[in-house]
Length: 158
Image 1 (spheres, rainbow, N blue to C red):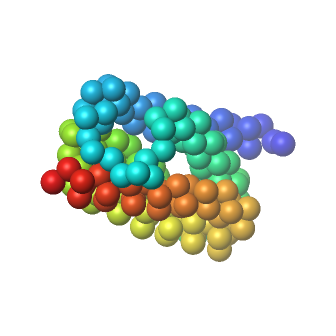
Image 2: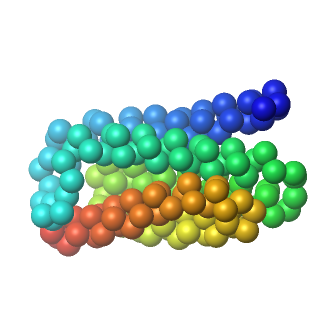
């Protein structure tokens, strides 16, 4: 692997885990208090599952970004990377809206935008690198589940 690729891989991991760290700042402070007091659906996973699940997803996102970034520069590659950045920012904003602001409806709105951006990103990745797109599939599935959970929490706490 070339030095330039190593730098890209490290930056991809740094970007993904910076988003994770920022989101967790807003999440951890609310888990034992505000979130614990909410009515939640029967299919809510135990809290301990979220950390490992998101860690795996952030690793896969970083790998997907790296696989795209190491491709020759092109308009399609740059657009795909911009979509990736947009979904990563929206991912953080969801944590801020839902956990930080304790706004479940804002969480629903943001997670719907997030899901759309992830699907678009994955579609653009697929056109450039099938392995990069496949690395995003668990993220899509988890955010589909999280969307159902977020919507259920909204309705159970009206």
